[in-house]
Image (cartoon, rainbow, N blue to C red; front, side):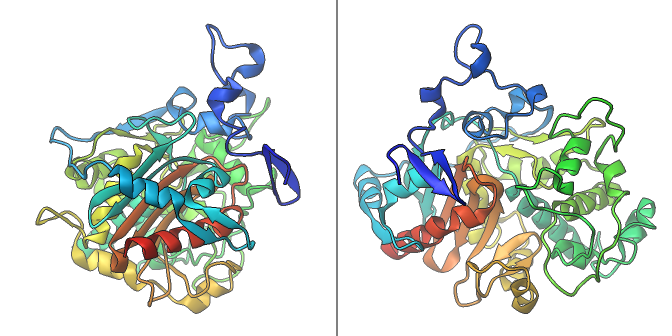
Length: 422
């Protein structure tokens, strides 16, 4: 390793300190210098190291709709005691590459922008780096899916949805698509056979076509593709069989969110506010990226305050209740924690997650662990460990999208921290 750099997948990148967006001068000045500008239309805002600024400034790049925090008082989980935070910073562990790291070093090596750790509902560690401030918001990417899945599981519990129904039962537009014979349960657990690639490193992957249709990426000159999420979903065709194996595809969440909006008549941002955000004692409004017709990006578009994401994790650690008041039915949380079939998950090739499964848009650890997680590209994480009474919320801007780049550090780091606290 060269000083100031780290190597991932054969490419060397500026490390967590050298890539600090304040140090690099992104979007500083009046006006910013040409080489220091980050604009949506230049299609560089998701490129490293620009991403270290842009994930904390998404509302300056994309159209969004607010998720209102409500008019209630914010909940209080305190401030981390200095002695506890210092002990955590000094915590040592071995990563999966055999390197001895401290917790503090692991934050830099995972390009952490902010992290909050709760133990028994109290803050024991909190740090912010780079462009993220404690009152700010940050792109959650696929942690968004876990919010959407929790809402859908609640609608199932209430009887508004039926997991055995095929997708066209709710969306006639999806006849003739990959989802024509897919059940809602198969969508919720990502067991859909669809011709769609989620390989983030491939510029030709359909994931990026989805992004252009939904407004997450600029469109090239002469673009004549789908104009919004719904148009794009109707182009998807079947590949393989449904229900046989876990196959992670963001478009499944968009189908799920379309169903929820159709059945309830309530847009995702309003449903998220009414059912979760306004009932958590949140500090800040959240925001959802929207497409050209105002449809929220349910698979990856949530921007939120870090402490509010931690509040959601704490709610689920406490089986859906806050202050003796049920917000998410306990049966819904129990269903998430039970997970799905690990054998179906195992075929997907997530070698660092043995024994995991995927249920209601959550990554669920082996039964003995009790852990379940929301995960997002570039290092976003909501880690809930009820047995250890620990919740960890982390925002990051790792140069590699896939979790396989940060998991060799993240997995043992979080395990070492929970061991320390318990």
